Length: 286
Image (tube, rainbow, N blue to C red):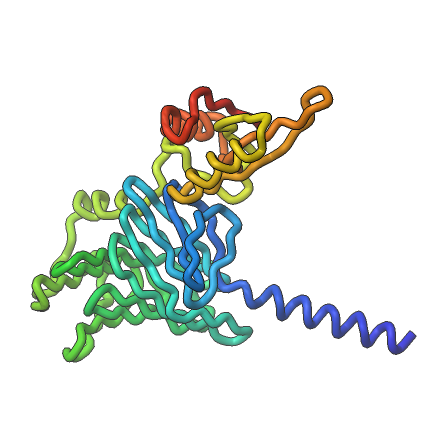
């Protein structure tokens, strides 16, 4: 009996440790979007776990929502590239280093977890922001980097320059053509426009964790034909998969994208893809 208890305790501890290693998870994706890992590129889908070394990429019109294990969220706008240089979840301290190579981003700390210890930095081109309990928006473009403090406090520094503390809401730091500009204050209208660049848009066919609807993009009696469509979709940044079903004595292979949160979003995604990749009459299931 004692041996069994020891075994169960060890199993519990091992399982908890394994779960704790999940540092980041995809919560929502407005496709097309990919993750690049170990030389491979695959489409992103809700529920996918991310780890150190991964680089996520968004295409035109895309958005991405990622949740870190300590409760913070990271958003990435269209035509963006974000590399997780470090992701180290721990019981007492969460460490992360995010490199935004291109595009707009937003980092928001969960209100209920602001007191949790973390060491998080975000680098946008030549500018690095050290994060404390905060909400910030930024954008990385060639010769133009912006970091805007929405709430909390951050420490911003360009390569070779002393760090600058920002602790007033709506302050923003900007660097143009490798020259740091005076810290300014953003107007509410401008902040709303910036923020929209990283928000998943309603009616654009975004997938969400827990979404129960699917869009069936094509059906084929030939598995190879269905696979050809899936390969094209996945290469283009859409997380399609084959789902076989019985039809009389035969198998039909449906090409589906899952995790759509509503019928409306599933219909929107089908409409976007209709006429591409051999898709003629998409339909919704759920």
